Length: 188
Length: 82
Image 1 (spheres, rainbow over the protein chains, first blue to last red):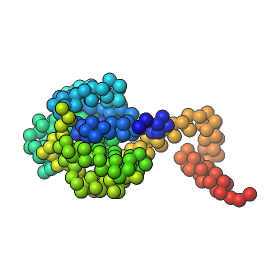
Image 2 (cartoon, helix red, strand yellow):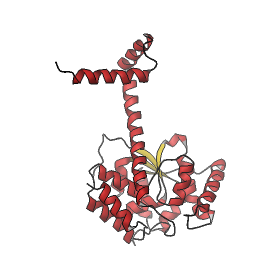
Image 3 (tube, helix red, strand yellow):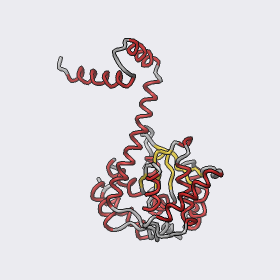
Image 4 (cartoon, rainbow over the protein chains, first blue to last red):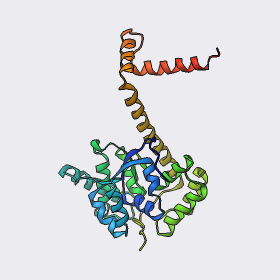
C-alpha cells in the first residue's frame, strides 16, 4: 500500500504493544496511512529489543516515521512515576509493580508535550488506557487502526481477520470475539 | 526469531473498546483536517479582506458565523433551480 499524499495524517505517541502488533502482521503501512510521526519514549527502546523487534523498529526510526522523544526532565520524570503507580493500581494491570509500567507512563507524559501536537495515543493495554483517558488523552489501539482502514475500504473482513489472527498466533492477547467483531463490523 | 507479544499478562481490549477507538481516531483525523482547511482558507488575503469587510458591517458576531452563513447561502444558491 502506498501512502496517498493528499490525506490528513496525525502525530501520535505509541506504546510498544501496537507497534509490535504492526510488526507481527506486516501492518506498518496502515500506521503510515493515518500517522505522520509516531513518538516513543526512550524507555521503550529496551522493550523493542527484548521482543525481537529491534531491526523493524530501527528501520522506522531511520526513515523518521518513528521518533524517539528526548529524555524526560525532572518534573516529567516525577509525573511518569505517578502515572506508573496509577497504571499498576488498576485492577486490569496484571502487574502491581509500578516500575514495570514506567515505559508506558513515560510515553503518556511525552504525548502531553504541547510542541509535539500528538492528537492520539496508541495503546492496547486496558490499565494504561484507563489512566490515559483519566488525564484527558485520546486513545486508540491497533485493532482500532485496522477497523478504520476497513471503513476506508483498505481492508476486507478477511484481511482484518488474518492480520489480527497473525498477532494472536504470536502471543498478542486479541480474543476471538474481538477479532470477529472488528472484521465483521468494519471490514469491507 | 519472530516478534514477541507485549505484556502477555495485561488485559487487552474488548470488542466495545474498539468501537470507541474508531470514534477517537475519527475525531483526531477530523480535527487535523479542520485545522488544515482553516489554515489554508484563512491565510488567503482575499478571504481575510472579505472577512474584515463583513465584520465591519457589524451584521455578524464572528468570523465563524460569517463562514458558516456564507456556506449555507452558497448551498441554497447551488440547490436553487435556474
